[in-house]
Length: 510
Ligand SMILES: Cc1cc2nc3c(=O)[nH]c(=O)nc-3n(C[C@H](O)[C@H](O)[C@H](O)COP(=O)(O)OP(=O)(O)OC[C@H]3O[C@@H](n4cnc5c(N)ncnc54)[C@H](O)[C@@H]3O)c2cc1C
Image (cartoon, rainbow, N blue to C red; front, side, top):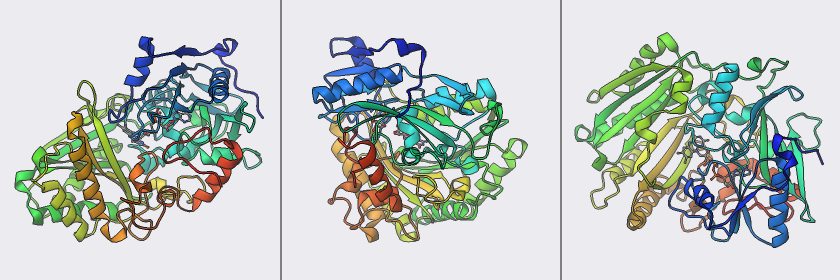
């Protein structure tokens, strides 16, 4: 196929193999973000080169053991922790980030985290990619899901910059085959590249390396191959006390917020440089919080004031307004510590995502009020979140990448988190009932249409494939991939004929 990239470790064919008797085994198990799922493989392979990945994959296939790959450990579902998984291949030792002169692109190995990638891009070349919001996420699992973040409204998705990908695939005979697939029209492997621009992780092979270059960029200066990092970042936060909010003011607030997003989410909006998150916590938490990030430098304060004025129209004024200016890197490596800080031992979470083309309608806002104020349940970690979307994301054609959702203005999620396993049932029941009622007129799910744009595969939710929760008649893969699914199925049949790389929401071959 293609010659694997050579790395410093290429001379060392054997990766580190650790079993439950080794403390390094538990380090890999423990890094899983969502404590709802626990992995217990027979062994873990810590791989440092493409050759080591090939050997690890071939061993597992020959031994007849189901395998899963991990990078940052931030999967929201139990794909890596599936009890049938007997071997985990951990790519996190592969972290090199370098300028590849030959490909005229910036290479990022799949074991680097989002934070490590932001830092290397900024420190070495002053550039940025619009990656996700949490520095601990691994590039291995993040990028193939499309990858959106704080800068998406002005720069689009991270996959809009993906030039090439190296994937270790498995042929019909069980042999590992490294393939480098690029976006070049003449590349015979181009479909494999396309499948990694939103087709979801864990479907086709083990990704070892990505190459990034902005569309239309060229030359040998890496500082010009990707967008320049923001000059500065201004963060803001303001909050309403739930005790000041009744059903009427709640309706007003969510109407104000949704209408603002409808008006200000085109790529040429002067607010494309503003990203926001509305956190509508359950009333028992006490607060509704609006926060966000502006890259408008000197104009950021005015931008934030205008937003808060629009959101607060007809409402009690939000309190605790905070504004802070810092460098892009300082922010990106520790964004919103009060939002992302985790208690010792971590949390269990359930996230139910939907992409919206329009604001929630008044019936849905009423549903949200009811579930967020229910006093017959104790679900302290329950929340309805709205991350602003759109802008440059929506300038790309739906079939240009496998990230088909190019009309949404909001990424909405019903989420909940808990610390004690005994709280799981109540939390799951609450979040599922909330989501089902929100989309009750669409079979309980955000069926793509005038108001919804399906769901985002980087926030997978196995309920969407469960007829108990999805009664719409629209299959889970249409919600995630829309018209792109048959094309992904062909890629799957071509590159993973033995279905070695599979999980609860993986692509099924055509
Ligand atoms: C706190 C938090 C914040 C998040 N914020 C965002 C955000 O802002 N934007 C966004 O787009 N997403 C976000 N996500 C979702 C995140 O992008 C996905 O969960 C992503 O898949 C995590 O990748 P990982 O490598 O860390 O996870 P892992 O659990 O290691 O892997 C996740 C999936 O990817 C597969 N995988 C991992 N490495 C490879 C590889 N090298 N080759 C092939 N398959 C691989 C795994 O098998 C698994 O199916 C967030 C998740 C969390 C928990």
